[in-house]
Image 1 (cartoon, rainbow, N blue to C red):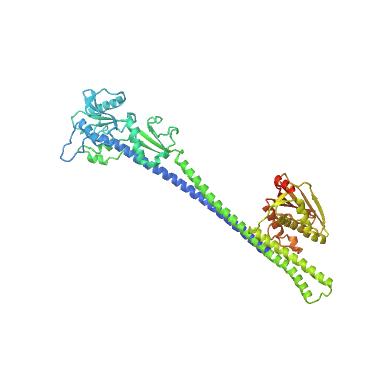
Image 2: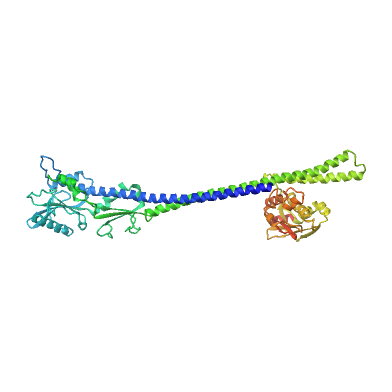
Length: 583
């Protein structure tokens, strides 16, 4: 019945472990899916946030250029008021006094159409005074474009309402040049000579001041995690600006986000200064799509946003997997501990039952002998001697049981104290055999004693080691002498630092499935229980505890029906101690 209960508890424990395993598996699959979905959402969020920051940066960049250029154009027309025209020098000085980007322009030119030529004047960037100058080589494409504009105006192909009336979008080939009419969007009936401002934006200022400021403002502290490049859209392999780390590979097409730069649309400028009569038309015209001359690319330093998200995903999976494994390990450990606790409880119950039986038998014998002596049923001295011997034998048996229990309790409570001293293995074996002589004689056991001469001394407690040997000898007599009254005891060196004592018998042996449990407290083999062999199940546990307290070890081997052997390995004493003891 107890066995069925134990098996039922065992099945429940394994069922609990299996249920936890299935639950952890389901949680693992769900967690994997949740983390995967969260990682994709995080990647999209990071890319969207990055793209939004770049879009705001592009707006600020273009607005900075547009505001600077618009400072030189006429103010908006007011009803019943004439536009106020100021000289370029005055406009330039006023712009320098109010701007935060004084170094934005590397050159400012005023182009005037005179006869068949275009006259160029460059403003002195210190005083603002215009001075005649030759056309720089890099400005020649702009000069050709303005000549074409003049020809179109003279032929009547340009102007509001005419096919050529719209101003062209910024040309990618113009580099850092921007051109705007001096009088803003001119009245088509005006007879004034056409004039243009030509602004050359400073590449150095963009690289060293404007871009770093805008990046720090819009990306912030996270900028250190990203690699940034700015390239001309017409020549994407010519890098205009690059983040300070030069050892990183070019971004190319692997950017996490990108945005056009240097897109100063004409309509955005002239919406601020429309001439009379076309204000409403300007308001109704849609803004052109962005088409900057530069492209800003950004990529995470780890390779991409997807890479850093994948690393975070891997870390999250590792952490959650570790948590699930810990849960599973805790469940398995809990089931194992529960099984061990159930097994220990069963053994303890069997121990209590066995000890109760062991105590009841000698007590009954002693009580009966005492009753007979007290009732004077034993009259002659021989009968009195018989009852006295019986009382003595059974009391010694009781004393042995009580001592085993007390020694086991003190050993487990770490109260055992051993007095170590150099011991002769030969004397230890002989004293143990002498203490067990009565049991050997009563069972008519033949002792085969083989002790190799010249054994080193061992350091140990003589009482404890003798108890361990005597316990093993009594077990050999109890379990093995019933079939073959023979035991063997031998001692020999085991390496240079140990002595091995072997105690053997030729009894029925120990089944292989019980070998691993013979040293467990309260354990008794199935055959001992069936044959009602007296014992508490503490003897071998005490032997193992005593030997291990001497830094030794105990091993057992058994061939059922042929030979069962216990080997006690005890460390030898230091050679100096042995020599002093023998002298």
